[in-house]
Image (tube, rainbow, N blue to C red; front, side, top):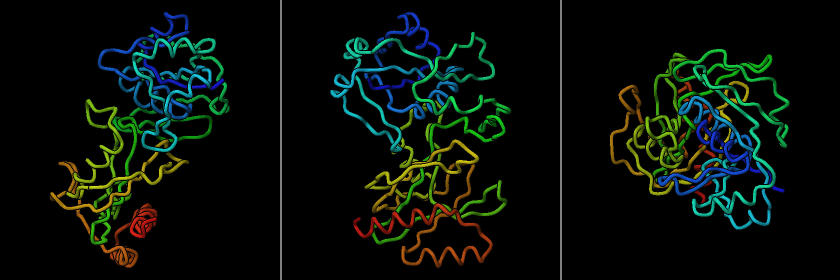
Length: 309
């Protein structure tokens, strides 16, 4: 059997419970696709960061399927490599439900502090990684960040976004586009790659990563990309935060606007020849600016791209 996962909110969970935990409910007219995901960590992230924000609670449903039946569905990678899911049309969902082996199990639950409905009893998961962790306790909920404790470990979660994109923009004449802005936590101006949050705009919680990358690139730098490709993804600071970044290489970017960020930002744009970036960054450090180390990873991908690798 193949184990799949589905992040759900309270309304969908209630309908699953009405089926005796044996079927997912029919899709609404504006929902043509049903998305089961292929790993628990991805489902946990959606349930915790999206469903809790939008519905007050988020749950991870775990269920088993016949591999021979699942072979008819193409696997899709949505942004980061671990964001893998199957796309099942609304018309196929009834048949899909018939191939669920046994019952649907709720293995993770996350709640907003103001959630007043009864808590759900969890079942053991076949994937035991999460069971090894101490209970997750929200110590402080801010407007943008959530302070969390698991046993002796303390870390933060971002409460208002579904992801982060970082863009490595290279012009047709081989210049790397960088941004400079004042960062309050380090009390200094910092040289960075263009970057931004995904799904933080009201009404756009399900924003596509590539769409967000194009939006942030233009907003911060005034450049647009003809070619945009994901090159890597991973944690920003695995000991401090649950944040995951997806890095895009933007080829042949062209300037069509002024950039500078939104009304809350004061961003200066730099376009530096690739061969001169490292020396230019050293000079900026000597001037007292800080340099985000992710630039050096971006420089690696930019040079590979220029070499056609």
